[in-house]
Image 1 (cartoon, helix red, strand yellow):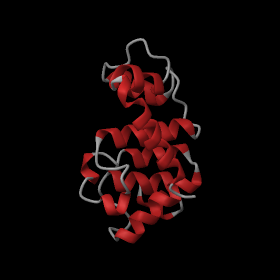
Image 2 (cartoon, rainbow, N blue to C red; image 1 turned 90 degrees about the vertical axis):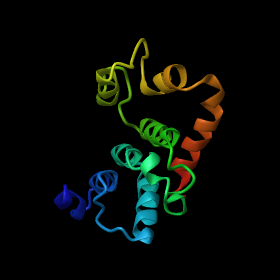
Image 3 (cartoon, rainbow, N blue to C red; image 1 turned 135 degrees about the vertical axis):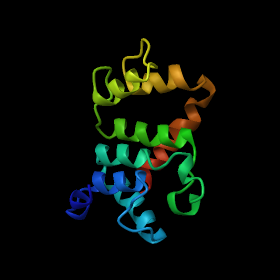
Length: 139
C-alpha cells in the first residue's frame, strides 16, 4: 500500500493511517491529511479515513478534530463517504461488508442502517452535524 500512497492516492494514504502505519507520524502531516481528504470530496478517502477515526484516535483530538475518537466518529466519516458519492446502497460493497457481520436486517442503504438500526433516533441530529463538520474540514 505504500507505493500507492507515495504515488498520490489519498485513499491509500488514509488507509495507512487506519492501519497505524502512516507515511508520517508528524501531527501536522496527519492534520493536513484530514483536511486534504475533506477538500478532495473523494468518497474512498473518506471511507479509508473513517477507519482511523474510531476509538484508537481518542488520544489525538487536537490532530484529528472533535469528530474522532469514538465509534460515532467512525460512523460520521463513513456517512460522509456516502454523501460524497460512495455506493452505500444495500447491494454496494460497504453494506455487503456490514451484512457479513450480520447487522443489515431490512435496511436499504448505509444511512438507513445507521439511523434506524445502529443508533437511537435521538442521535440523528448530532451525527448529521458531525457529518457536516467532517465534510467541511477542508473549507
